[in-house]
Image (tube, rainbow, N blue to C red):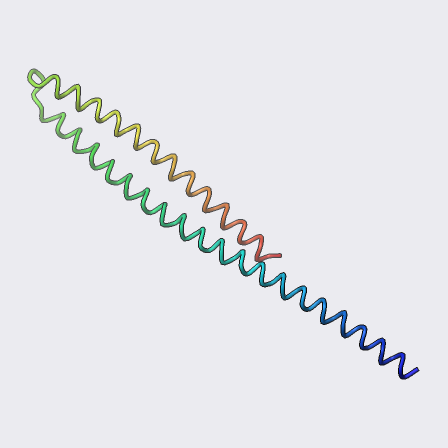
Length: 122
């Protein structure tokens, strides 16, 4: 009877050690996922900062173009005015593209954070 108890304890101990090793492997995998998500979040944040910088540059260019347009005499330089209008339009289109790109990056970052939180909660 003592021998059976010892064998039972040994089996329980082996099962516990096996479960513990599985949990440790799962933890290491989750930690690797968290690290990957942190890197992705940092990359997205850097990309977002760069996009915001580009947007500010384009907004400044648009403002300068508008000021230049106001300073040009309406009777002279009509070709320059048309060229500037076309450039302003291109800048506005690019600005709207950058705004959409920024919104997409924000959404991607929010998704990455949500996935990270979900992984951490598991």
